[in-house]
Length: 161
Image (cartoon, rainbow, N blue to C red; front, top):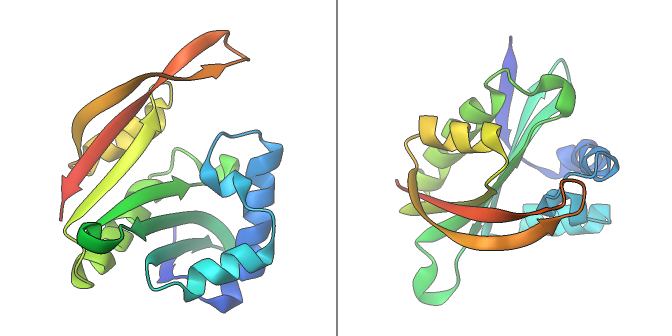
C-alpha cells in the first residue's frame, strides 16, 4: 500500500474537515469529531503549538495525527490524537503516521509524547505499545459508555522522544 505522509497544510483543510465529519457520523468519541468548521482546522494548521500530519492513499485522507504542545514549562511535551478512516483501519497506517509525526516533532524540540486512550480501544492501545509507548496509569471510570452500559477507563501512555 503506497501511502504519502506529510505535514498538513492549508491545501488539506477541506479533505481533513470531510474526514472529521465522517468520524462524527461514525459516532467515534474522539476530539477530531468535535471540530465543527474548516476555520478550526485552519487555525490548527497556523498554530505553532499544534503539529498536525496527514496520510494520503490514492489522493484520499488515510489518516490524521496531531500533537498539541504544552504551555509554559510544559512546552517540551505534546498530547496526541490520531484517527484513520474506517475502511483503512488495520493496515498499519496509524503506526507509520505516528512514526512520521513523532520524528518531525522530535526534530522540532519535543521530548515527550503523551496519549490518553479508552481502555476498550484495543487497536489504539496495540499501536501505542508497538510504537514503544509506556503505560503510565489510568483514569478509572473516565466516562460511561451508553451503548455498552458500562464505565470505560482512560489509559495514559507516554514515550520519551
